[in-house]
Image (tube, rainbow, N blue to C red):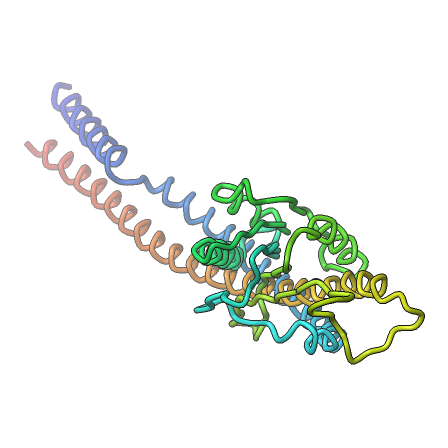
Length: 306
């Protein structure tokens, strides 16, 4: 009887010690198994999001292809878009209104961070040159990042913008921007430009207001009938801003979907690697448990023989 009690006590002590070690430093089999199942579920979600983004990207590419010829007429007036990387912004006038175009949704890598970084660079370099800049932010992600540093510079913001964008929606946004741009010498649109499914660049466009008469008069090569050039310049300026903004929206939407597709692909690969690592850890924990149980059986048998 005493021997039986001693064996039972040894088994309980061994199991209690093993559980104590596991709870202190190592996850149990059940915990590792739950982590594996959770990671597999996350992998299914990221794989599905990648396929959804790939399907949406095709539509955004078609809309961008349609928007490019629609915006060709603005190039002789405003010039070609320029890359933000290594830009000095020396050509910008004294007072600028910067319009960064970001997204309302996340899970798309650093695509919004690149835009906000470009805005910081613009404001910093303009400030060093004795110039000033304010912001009209489009997209919740850009607003959240920029208001921490430049909250006093944000004049307006637009969030929950319906996707995919339309020309009517862009016209409404352009009207809001035009309402606050009267005191500025130029509007600077910062956006992501789509190159292919793996590459996108940060670009900026400079839109200066038309001058109807006097020094620096715009469109001198054209005649206006009846003689209402000032009114035509106001309408044409709003249309130019809308056209440029619409093209930037389409370009940014395609870049966003390509970035999200890449981010979800990377997330799926990381989940697969984590599953392999957890499976190896689970097998080791299982082997350790089996070894412990065998030791208990052998120890009990040895105690009975004694």
